[in-house]
Amino acid sequence: MPTVAASGSEANNGAVITNWETHEKMVLNSPYLYPKVSIVDPELTLTLPQKPTAQGGVDIFCHLAECYLTAKTTSTLNDAIMEALMRTVVESLPQVLARPDDIEGRARLSWASTMACSQFTKLGGGEGAMTLHGIEHPLSGYYDIAHGDGLAALLPAWMRFTFPVRRDRFRSLGSNVFGAEDGIAATEKWLGKVGMRLRLSDLGIKPQRYAEMAASAIRTAPWLKYHPRSLDITAIKQIYRDS
Image (cartoon, rainbow, N blue to C red; front, side, top):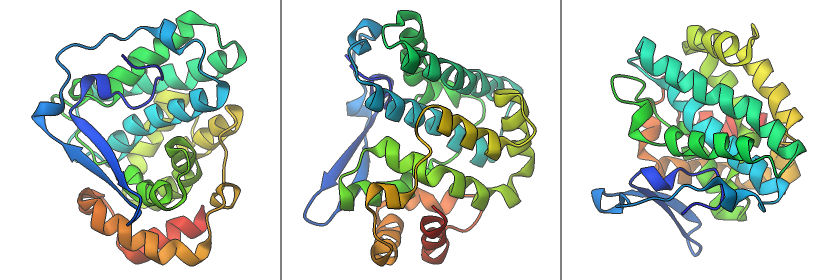
């Protein structure tokens, strides 16, 4: 019974566990983690404060955008599903932040959350890699920041790093999700609109730890190897610096 629209754990088999002694934040997947029954009631999210609402919205968007932008195989149907879900988040999150008791907006975010991080968006194509999540997890593991804040701070730099090998996908993101030519600029504008245009320095993250956190990302997120451009320690450190 989710009380925040974010992780989509009500429809997937993943869990994230942090070892605070080693600062390692890792993903666990098992068929035994699929819930037998989920009750998704947007009324349970009505009292959620604005900040975690915005953080959750960014998480939903990233679950979709990361797979959309990195997918090797795509299909018209899967693209359309992911684009519709991203548009829903882009349009609904500002409305809910302006009026937190907007039950229809909360319902749209809750359903988008359930769909975004599930197999529904990937059947038949669109099986990309959530590599932004992989390089964000060390930030949360070392500094105990909100996951959504870390994603928001890293997202534009991660996009710019990925852009040279996925130009067509970024054009599609811009036109089909934001109605804009530049998908990266449109994403940054949206982050600003929902109060999530953040920098790592805003979150108290120190450059002295970039190398250590980059090494942790490589160690704890083996799916980084599926990024369409090599995400080695040097590249991850540069994304941190650009963030």
